[in-house]
Each structure stands twice: as C-alpha cells, then as structure tokens.
Image 1 (tube, helix red, strand yellow):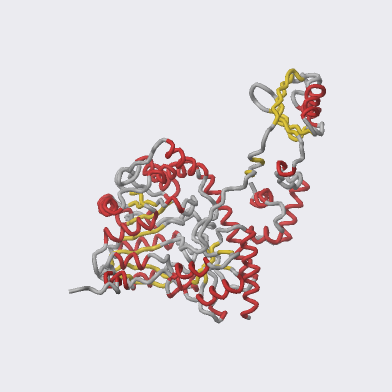
Image 2 (cartoon, chains in turn brown, green):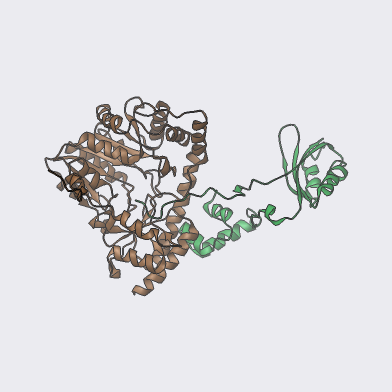
Length: 393
Length: 159
C-alpha cells in the first residue's frame, strides 16, 4: 500500500501540533522587513559582553580548550557560581553536587520540567509571563495552571489566588521575578509568604531569577533563601542579562542533590555539557566583572527613569518597574488591541514593541517596551510614540 | 561618582530636561547642581572628544619623562607649576618610579617638540634628565576607542 507523500504534518506529535507559535516570532518577521526601525522589542542588553569575559573565551580557544567538560560543568565555574550566589543572594549551594551548568536558562527550565513532572501533574505559573513557560510545561506532558497578576496590584504575585489554584495534582509553582515582561519584582515580604505557602502545601518552587541582579530600588530577596526552602527549590539563573552574555548561551540550575542528579541525567543524554568556551568566559565574568555589571545596572536604572518619565508625560499609564529592563505601559484606554497597536505603531512610526498578548491573555491591553537601548534611541522612540498617540486621540 | 557627573562625563550635551528624567529630579534642580559643581570647580570645563588622526593636522605629540631634583622648600610642586605653564604641555602628572614628571606635549612638528625638550625643559634648574617618546597612533583616548566601540547586533525582536 502506497502512502501519500503530501501531508508530512501527520508525522508531527500531537502535543507539538497543539503548541502555538510564539507571538513574538510572528511579530519579529514583520519587523524584519521595515527599515530604520527603532526597536524597543528586544529582550537583551545593548551592551556587548564584558571584555574580560570575551578575552577569556579567546584565551580558551588559544589554549586549545575545545573539549567536552564534565556533564555538570567545569568545577571552577560551579565554585564561582556558588560564591556569587552566596555573596549576592545569601544562597548556599554545594558546587560539587548541587549546581549544574546549562545551555542558557531555557535548557535549565526544560531539564527541571522534564526531570520532575509526570503526565497530569499541574504547574502553577503567573501570567503575563515569559513566552516559554506554558509551552515548556506542555512539552513535559504536564498541565499549566495560570494565576493572573493584575495591573491594579502592579503585577505583584497574588498569594491568595495562588493558594486557591493549588489542587492535589499541583506539583510545582514556577515564577519569574523580576518579571519579563512586566518588570515587577517580589518584595521580601511576599517572598517570605510565598515560601510559607510552598512549604505548607508541600510543593516544589521553580524560580527563574535571571533578572535578579537588575533591580533598582531594593535588593532582590530570593524565596530560595528562606529556611526550609533549599530542599524544595529549583533555582535558575544565568549569564545572559546582567552580564550581557546572551549569545554565550550559559545558564545554571541549583537544586538539592537528588533533584539535580535527575536533571543531570536528562542533560547528559540531550546536551552532554555547555560549551567549554562559554564556561571559561563565565568564570572570568563571575570572578572579575562585578564593576561591569554594576555600571550596566546603573545605566539601565537611568534609562528606566527616563522612559517612565517620558511615558507619563505622553499620558501613557505605566507602573514604575522595579526590575529587569522592561516597561509595560497600559494601552487599554486607547481603543486598540495590543497587537493592532504594535502593528500600527510599527507601520506609521517605525517603532517596534512587543504586544502584551504575546505573554498570555493577561498581557492584553499592554505593550512591552525594552529600555536596554541608548538614551538617544529612547528619546527618538518617545517622540515617535507621542506622534502616534496624537493620531489616536 | 554622583550619577549627574557620570551622565555629563559620558555626554556633556545631555539636555537638563533629560538628566532630570533620568535622575527623577526637576530640571531646575539639575541646573542648580551643575551650577554648584561649576562654582566649586568640580566641573572645570566641557570638551569634545576628537579623533585628531582624521583631521590630518600634522601635529606631533610626545610623552616626556622628566627626572628632577626636588627643591628643599618647594618640593615637586614649584617645579611642576613652572613646567606646566608652558602651553606645549597639554597634561602633566607626578609619577612614582624611575622618573618624576610625566608630560604630554604637543607641537607643530618634530623639531618644535625636540627643541622644547632640549632647549626649554632640560635647561630648567632642577631638571636632571628627560626621555622623549613620540606618539605614532592613537588607539584609545579618555576611555574612547578610536575605531569605535564593538557593536552588538541584536535582533530587533526577541523574547
């Protein structure tokens, strides 16, 4: 019996067929064709990686450091990570058996979900949130349960709503603070109460703290740092944002040894190890670049203040984000869906920003504007947004 | 360093209104603070950073190490103020090591700089030795790379 060659889609797994394309990707393809765009649509710093880190990568190549590393990652890197987390976030992880170096936080999250979830397990996430959370949970055959964070509360985590969403099937809570796309963070009080909820309900906490170094008003307190949390936390972080090393693809996951061992088993079969060159660069970044990251943080701080002030002057409602490098202005009163708003802004004024709906239905009515770009570009972008708003009013 | 000074040292042309937005204070406060810095001579002036190699000025620049015998009463300072007043001297430092003063000197041509060293600096009482290094090419000046900073070509939309 011959098989028709015409429908290759039939080979695609059902749970992947049902996976939506990232809304960001659709928008990216539109922006590509437009010249002279000012983009507030990026998700990475405009700085290049610190020279110390780049030079260490070059030196690694010169010395012929081109091999695999231990599955867990170079021990000297795991030690540098442990020192950094102890110094900045009061977290105690054993570099010998509680830290695993990954290809970006994306891999770390995927490992955590695949190693720990069974089909039918429920994972609670807050929404709007980073685009990959729901798809990654679905790829691990588990069920996504969403808790909305509302603009009225500054997109803070609502612990009552979170606790109501817990069922006997709930296995983990996945959070990302400081948050992409809202820029909201976790107060130390909320972090403590969250820890209580997690412990009381015997859950796992998966905390993606990739923006933890980029806070502007108060130091970030990790929920992993409270008593009783070490045993039940999967801690994710990496070099991409604070060190401006996105292209190095270097992240890490810290967890109690048995859980880390489970993640390592998935990692060793699907990835083996992160690039040794990136690992060498990360050692240098963690050891010598505190000043570089502080300079970048101060620069983001000034840009945040600038963009927020300009948005308010333009009459855009907008919370002052406490962390990350995103502004999330409220466009609900302007009469357009966020996707149409972003499209028209792009077509008429050549400013690219990401529609809030790309981050889940709770992001509808908002626009994600990244301020990791120069003041000159922010100034021009605001002038153009101002002209666009005139046409709407 | 005060963030206001940091902003001005990165770009002294940043408008006061923008500085105000960046620091969350009023433009009037920004102007007052700048005024105050100028009065206290914390801010001594504002300059452009120019890549002179692009202008074909045919100027000659040299670094000169100067060894001196410090004076009994004046120490290094009196000699320094004497040498530093020559307009050829663009910058001057007291340094530790095998020599004392480090001079950054500029002249119209090689002969002019050479004669400034041999006929003027060397003959000042207290100067015991000089060593002149002519500069051939500028790679980095005041923290600015002449070939421009490395650019980070980002995708215009990313998650």
